Image 1: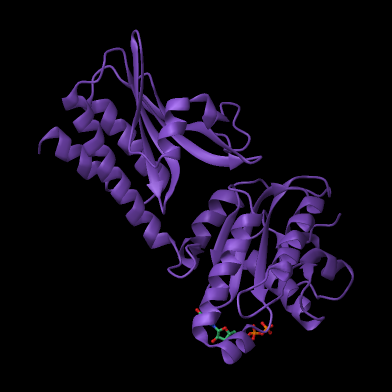
Image 2: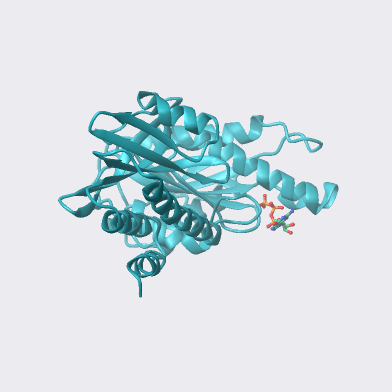
Length: 334
Ligand SMILES: Nc1nc2c(ncn2[C@@H]2O[C@H](COP(=O)(O)OP(=O)(O)OP(=O)(O)O)[C@@H](O)[C@H]2O)c(=O)[nH]1
């Protein structure tokens, strides 16, 4: 098999976004001589678009960052790369910067109308047309494949992550944090189950199409009030799950209370106002099923005790409202 085809076949053998990204960078490294390659992640922070190198070439190998995007010391505002910022603002396909001995080509990755990442190729000589064609060809295969992967991970109605991807994300985000041994101020990841109150009556009164519209708008409210490092899933029906990045208990309470209040405040066209109940639990201890079970019990209590409220599993266990379904010494005591 020709090297290009062999590289493309190898590249598309991956079912994981990061491994696919590493593979495309390796492919570019093998196909183009004397280049440096990087995959830049684009994300929002404090109302500014930021970028940070997520994977890059180093001594002929591809290495990936060990940091979260928001805390990456290499992150910088997109505005610091004006050529790329302009290209993204215009929805463009590529941008270039040339200075003596250093020529850079940027190719933004577009997903659902948003630039989420960017491939960067740098070399000491100006890019020839042939080189640009090779890089862009590899990039297009990569972007199409990235979109296919993304499609298989998302809920068709809301565009949120689907349940199928939950365990993998849980293991990556929540499960990767070592179990903490107490301390209310210790940052840790959290899982919340969010369920719209009396959603059946929305369907019954307005019809399923309006019900679907509400689900789409609820997804937008959740997106608007979560950070890019948080993961939002639709588990089917009117149930949503949020995996919250590592924050303290006080911050988690604030975030979930803010979500509840935002839901109540939102005016849904035709329908007016709805509310949601939220149950949450710390997610660094236990399997995904166990953590989900705890958040679900807290949600159940929120529904039982009047709806439109946020309940924390450990509070309910400590106050004796809920019987812990697990051994007492496994409950986080603050
Ligand atoms: N429009 C729409 N409705 C859905 C979808 N999936 C599930 N549902 C409806 O969601 C409703 C869920 O109702 P219930 O489980 O009884 O809960 P609820 O009415 O929200 O009541 P509480 O949760 O107890 O506050 C049912 O009427 C389902 O038909 C969907 O994709 N679209």
